[in-house]
View (cartoon, rainbow, N blue to C red):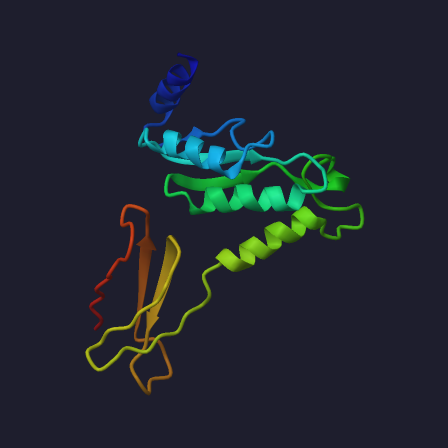
Length: 179
């Protein structure tokens, strides 16, 4: 199988390279959200990291709606680790998934992407620990810098780097010892 050969060759060249499956041609061509989810479930069952690559949606009256469905399915699926879109400004030659027109004003698809990025972005969170030293925050997977300061202190007393990953699905309790 050709893919196995290329994966093997990449591993020979760099044993630390991050290899993943892509969903080539699965989410395009008017697939329903149920079909997209079923395909992602199938790929996810292989236990390999999965990325949606070159996501593009044909132009038409429902382009924005369909793009949003694809992005939401990919973003919410536990096997999907990343999404790469094949779209951009019309000026750069993107004719199918045009995110901005020649004036660099968002198209409907561009508005969808901006809205979802805003929705999915983890806000800067400030939390105050209770009497027992606990606090709670809802966060997306990713890298975080946690700044801890004592009550009444003007400066940070501790800075902790933390990576929240899908290796810890569901609710995660993180215990930090400060000071």
